[in-house]
Image (cartoon, rainbow, N blue to C red):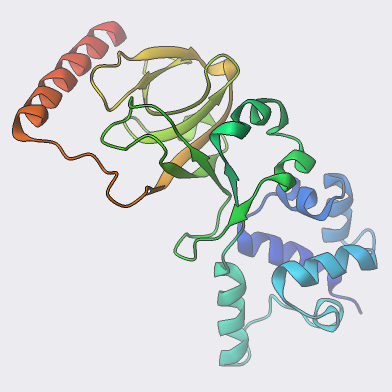
Length: 249
């Protein structure tokens, strides 16, 4: 009896990947992956070899062992934990690739060409890193890299949190998002730098949203604020919040 199909499903869920995401990594159709997982078809050897490389398990284990059965030894349980928490590749989108990303964000071949890195402290999920430019999100300096976790639907977006928003009209921007309880068709994007006014984007124009999880900056580039600057910042933010509340009501 082969456990290959069952193990594919188990390993995919350990990493928190959807069938679409996993099938892209394996360069197969999602429907074919579904057939493998439901044991309606036997996975091809080249697919299992790729799975073996990603998860660092042997082909014998994929075929002959139920990897999801961790009721046995302590070593088996610890190995399952390591498989679940293994660092995942994070694709990096530099400023020079931003224009191409708008056309290729859904193209696995384009994504595979991006440089990658890993961060072991992140929980399982799908992550991507974006370089930002400009001073609209000060004190986060221009040139910072924002590591974001993929948000699958706009309903999961939380007010005032920071996100990388990818839209057809605005491109790639790093902003705080404010949702209006009266409208699900528009989102308000707010800069941390009060010099920049909030603006709205149409929900159907947004192609991706990534919730910021980490900010990577060069040493000594983080801007320092004095007391007067902070006071001015608070006053401006209060004015913006008041203005937004009036618009929402």
